[in-house]
Image (cartoon, rainbow, N blue to C red; front, side):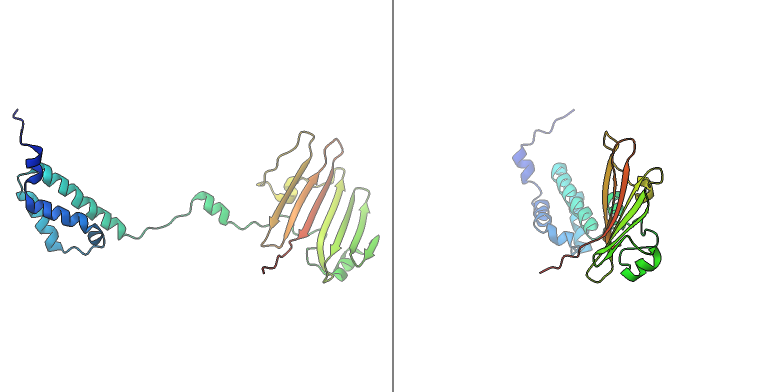
Length: 219
């Protein structure tokens, strides 16, 4: 097998036309990327490559040329953006499971509360206090427009709602060693937050609170 002992300098200096073409491709890379290179000029360069006797130079220029051509094709192809599973999850608007208590909602007028729940043990300008049994009572607070802004219900005994009754089965919560639980979730679209609190021990007390979100005015 005969080894080509031609000096490297001689290899680099051969085919001046090819070198000139390669330099043009390199210096005008962005011009090529913009797909402004004429088809006739592209064919001429390829033909020069075929005629050259310097395989090394031809190979380098071929790689450079087709690399830039492929890049220009990719650059001219619009990319379709797809959402990752995380992004899709984040784009889902949270909706509360608990939206009312005994037909009373956040924003219910005070007079409607009286009509639906009857006489309260405490009824004043700030709100109401109802005790329905030894195991269930509710405190309702009013805003400046005399509408419900807070509903806080306390349960004890077997009729106390479970965490999943308030937040649904898909919401996770960490239970403390003593069995106590606390979770608060804000629902901006609904305009209020919901909190679930359960004490520890054998006879836990559960408090479920709905409260209107405060709107912070900018500037």
